Image (cartoon, rainbow, N blue to C red; front, side, top):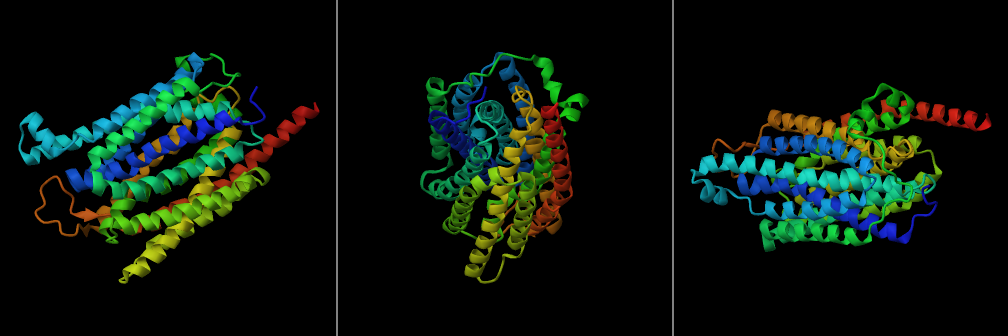
Length: 450
C-alpha cells in the first residue's frame, strides 16, 4: 500500500533525479538545437528532424522499458544504471564536430557537414534511449508507485517547478558558460553530473513496498486495448489534453533561443535575464498555487491555466519593437505569463494523470503517456513550427557564403501566435474531462454504497 506520507528520503530522490533529469532534457531540447545551429550548420530542417526522431525513440523506449520494469518489479535499477549510462552518452556528444568528422572519414568540408549532422541525430537518439529508460519510464513510474492521491498535487507542483529550474540553469547559466568553457567541456561536465546521480541511486533508492513483479512483454500493447481505454476514460482524456498542450509547446520551444538570438538580436546576457526573471517568478507562483491544486477541482483550474498560457504566447508574438529595451521588457513579461500558464497546466495534468492511472499499472502505461506527452507533440509541433518558419522565410543575418547544407531562414514570430491558437483547443476538451471525471466519482460513490 502507498504510504500516506511522502518520506524525506523520497523527497531528496524526487528532487535530485527530477532536477538532473530535467536539466539533461533541457540541454537536449534547447542547447543541442543551438549547438547544431551554431557549430555545424544553421539548418532548421536538421533541428526539426532531430527533435522528431528523439520523440519517436523516447516513446518506443518508454513503452518497452516501462513494461520490463513492471515485469521485473524493479524501478531502482532502471533509474540508477540508466542515469549512469545516460551521462556517458551526453559527455561523448561534445566531441562531435565537422573537424573531427573530416579527420575521421577524410572527406571534404561540405560532405563532412552532412555526415556530422547524421552523427548528431543518431547520437541524440542513443542518448534518448537511456534517458527515457531512466527518467520517462522508471522515474515516473517510481513517483506514481510512491505517492498517494491525498498529496499528489503537492508532489506534482514540485515536479512541475523542476523543468523551470532546469530551464533557468540551462538557458541562463549554460549560455554564459558556453562562451567561457566551450560546448565540449560543458557536455563533459553535465555527463559526469548525470552519471554521479545514477551512482547515488544505486545506494539510496528504494522501490515501493507494494511494487510486485507482474505482466509480460505482451503488456506493451496493454494501453491500446479497447477494454483498458473504456475502463479508464478520464486517464485518456487527460492524455489528449496533454497532447494538445504539448503540440502547442513544441511549435515554438525548439526554436525559442534561436529566435531570441537571431530575430530579436538578444545576446547571451539579455536572453539569460529574460529567461531568469520569467522562470523565477513562474516558479514562485507555482509553489504558491501548489496547495491550491489539491483543494480545488483540478479539471476546472485548467480553464485558467490554458487562458494564461495562450495570453502569454500572444504577448510574445507582439513583444518586438525597434527599441531593444522595450522588446526585452515586453517579451520578458509575456514570457512570464506564458510560463505561469505552462507550469500550471503541467502540474494539473501531471496530478490528474497520476490520479487516474490504474493501480499497479503505472509501468505499462508510461509508454501510452509518452505517446501523448512526447511522440505526438515532438512530431507534429516542430513540423508546424518549421513550416511557419519556411513560409515566413526571414533571412539569416550575416549569412555570408551559404552552402547547400544551410537554411537561409530563421524562426519567425508567428510560431507563438499559432501555438496560442492550438492551445485554445484545450477549451473544447476541458468540459469533456469534467464530465467523465464526474461520472467516475459518481460510480465510485455508488459502488461504496452497495
